[in-house]
Structure formats: structure tokens, C-alpha cells
Length: 399
Image (cartoon, rainbow, N blue to C red; front, top):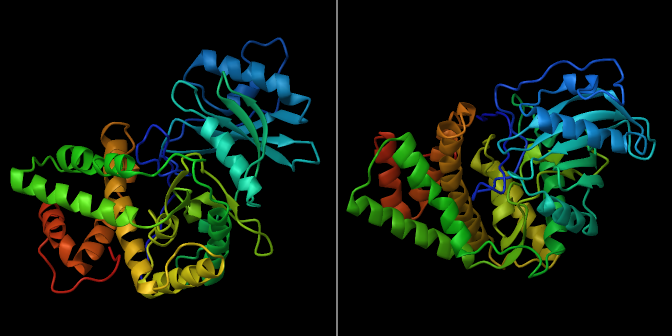
């Protein structure tokens, strides 16, 4: 069974796409942690040697805040090290803790407030906890400085349970399905921002702006622009024809933490959650940004999700064929915007690793467009952009 794997992905609220979280750019600037304990009077404490601070003033502010919470949570500043970075301006640091209540380590979210708003993280974390879903607990938040101390869900993700040489792990995907259903069952209107026409369209517009114009260096003529416009509106109308629930917006293996098969998965990078089409998160899970499976496996997991969701009273309809079509069309919207985001990350933000994965998204886009008559004009446009001769046959999601 052919599959391709890579690292994960995170977006920020500043990205209209907001694929939310876990990717690590190829170059991370940090030093090894020091074993010495900082002096309370030191303006540049030794503990900061574990992490590079491009802004010395921010590094000092962090040192002051960390000292203020050190005793309360039995933190060990000398253990400070990078936990992960993502495609946004956030990064995560790990600290050892001697506090028995919170485990052997805790996480610091470093989110400069002029670039990242952490309030949505706090709000959605509360919603997840109310739904009985395992997610980071907020221990301390310096809102003015953008430093947050949260519980550590561990270092092992669902992605790390996936063996690229073995068949896809149905068991762990069904764990993810159960987690998703618990999240969706907690849905209430008016709590999260709507995933409406304006937001869906703004996300998709990144494709012509960044992927076509900037990455491919193509200027669309009037007829091609009309094809894109018509396809985008058709896709959005299909997406919005389905009922709304809470949408994580990047529900994928890199954002699900593995505490062992006897425990539920933990959920990360949920700060961009919205209230939108019920087809979104299952499409995100099964049409991942960084791992592709054969369609028989995607169908198997999706139909199991649909059966369990129906039993739970979620509005997935009575016909699986209709629902699977909705998942495909929702995944299409998602992959169009990801291609735009990845081009922007490369060309604007200097993170070329992301653009290397765009063939996967182009493959997803072509596979879905080839299935539906109303999407054939978009298929031909994409193939022309890619310099691809139309094949005699095309297999689902293969790149």
C-alpha cells in the first residue's frame, strides 16, 4: 500500500486558512540547555541559554515571568528547552517540574501578543474540557506578555504511532473518530465564530493569490478567472449545505497526542476552532496534509465515523453516499487553501519545507475534481497550471 509521510503543520489566526498546528520548519535556532540555576538578580539568566531569543527585551520579560511562577509550579529553569515550533509566530518550550499534580514536565507557549492572540486558545480549551476531551490545562497566563504555562500531554503524537512500512492503523484512527464525535456532540451555535461564506472564500482566495500568481507565476486570463470563480462558489455552496458543528479546523495525526491505547487521544492546536460544516474535521483527518492513504481505508474509517455519528445523533444524514460526497467537497476546499498557504509560507515567510508537500494537495484536488462533472473545468485548469497531461485514469489521492 503506497503512502507518503512527513512532518505536521500549524497555522496561526493570522492565516485566514488557520490550519492549525505542530509543524517544525527545517531550521530551528536554539542552544543546548544549561545545567546551572539562574541568579534571581541576573538580567540575562542562564536559563535563557536553552532557547534563542531574537528580541532580547522579550527574553528578559520571559525570565521575569518565569521567576514569578517558578516556585508555585516547582519549575526547574535549567531544564528549559524547545518543545516545538510551528508555522505561526508561536513556539512551545518544555520545562521539568517537581509538582506531582502536573506531571514531570510542563509546556510554555511563547506567543508574542502583537502577532498572536491567545484568547481563542483559552476559550476553546475550556470547551474541550467541558466536552470531556483531553487537552492542555492552562496553569498561568500572562496575557500582556503572551506567555502561557500549560500542562504537558507528552511527546508522542498519533503520527508517531503510524508505521510507514505497515498497513494503516485502524485502531488509532477509530480513537480519533471517537474523540471527534465527543467534540462535535458538545456543539452549540453562537459560541464560536461561524465558518461562513466569507471565511471559506477568503481561505480559497489564497490559492490564486499565492499559489498561482506568486508560486507558478501565472496570470489568469478572463476565461480562466471565470472558471476559478465558478468553481469556488460551487464548492462553498456545497460545503455550506451541511449542518454546522464545532470544527477543530486541523484535526489530524500531528495534533493528536498519544497517551497509550488505554487512554483517549489528547488534542492540540485548537485555537482556530469555528462553527461550521460537519464534514470538515473528518475530511481533515482522512485527507491529511502529510500522510495519504488508499481510498479503501479512507472509506472504511469515514463510514465508521458516519455510523457512530448517526448513533450519537449528529446531523450526518441518512445516506452515506451523500455524506462521503460532502467530505470530498469539503476536503477540496481545504486543499485549495493549503496550497495557497504553503506557497505563502515559502515565498513570504521563508519556510520552503511546506511547499515541497504541495504535490499531495494537487493530487487530492485532481482526484476530487475528476469525480464530479461540475468540477471538470477546474481540473483542466489545475492540470494546465501544473503542466500535466490529462491521464487516462486517476487514482484517489496518489502522488
